[in-house]
Length: 155
Image 1 (cartoon, rainbow, N blue to C red):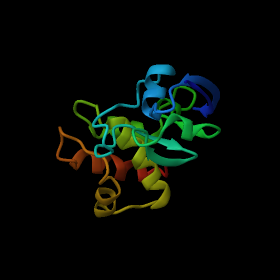
Image 2: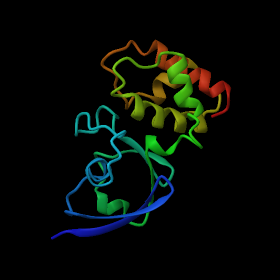
Image 3: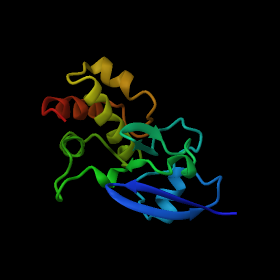
């Protein structure tokens, strides 16, 4: 039996019919075609699926779509404004904070919330704040540099 779920996604009302066990990450990717949110591990270890649920960073592989009913979801596609990259997106680009890019959407979504909570984070605070997000390609140096640079422009 399918359930109708309605939520605001990236500022627009969206409704979909899903199985009650459907994860939010699968609703976003398969039903709403928002493929910027990645499925990495399905165990909440990698953070590739990080989105904002009611303005809080969550791993979309740990949230059922029905739990998001009536709530607001923001994905990586929803943070740019008028075609301009979000300052964190721009910093990741300018500071080479990615290699293959698979972890990047989740890293960016988490990093924005980190900088909102800690406006001028130290490198150690950045590393600690990104602990739930894994990158298998880099040594994190450029990621830390990108988050630091974005924090300096007051994300």
